[in-house]
Length: 298
Image (tube, rainbow, N blue to C red; front, side, top):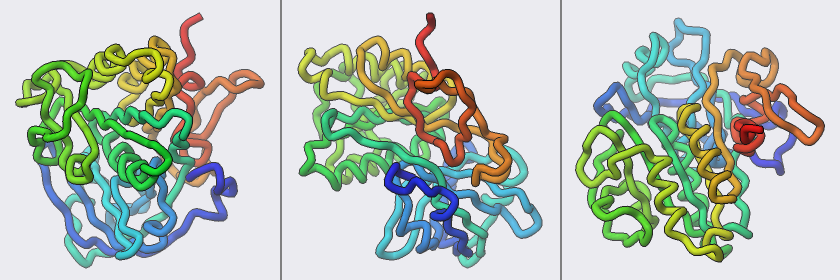
């Protein structure tokens, strides 16, 4: 949720979402399509839903939104089965109805002064980057030029293919792309240590550093990093951003009970102008300034 919606709790909707379908991918990964018109109308890149997985399971699961279609009232979610709840969600068939709370959270805040947006997604942290890429493409008149970099150590939850879009600065042979960006005419590249064809043979943060290192100072001054993924990856992104002197926003992944700011179970320590403080990932985030969450070592 963006800064223009400061009253988080008053703007979180509750609706009965209908399962439209699911796609199964290797590694226990699923893409879930839901009809949730209230959420689709308000969702922003970085926001998420708190979803029931089955009638008999009262605890909801926080899941990032990958794409929305406000016209049809549908949203798309990528998740990986971890635990009993998501295993039950994976069995949901078209027509199943699930209680959907959302959209929740403060999303990314792109800066038009830094239009070269470097989007870094790892694992199930990829969905917010896909969402953000599409949103920035819709703001092309403001000069935004997103580049998506995605990493995974298990097969990707899509069919990678060689890109037809040239990306100066990426290492030779790194040609595999994310089809959801490629189909929008947006550049992307993939990274993995698993030896997948066309992928950069290393961490996605190393690929980001290689691309940033190819830029001259004027181009680097136009870059901002936006990232979502596991904590070690986000910490590495913060280090890369500090190394190249560019701002970085990170979307944190935390366990949540209520997801509306009541239980404070997802609180993390961040650095504020007033000193260190505990912030709730669900409503104060999930997007934070990387330097506030991962301050440079003294």
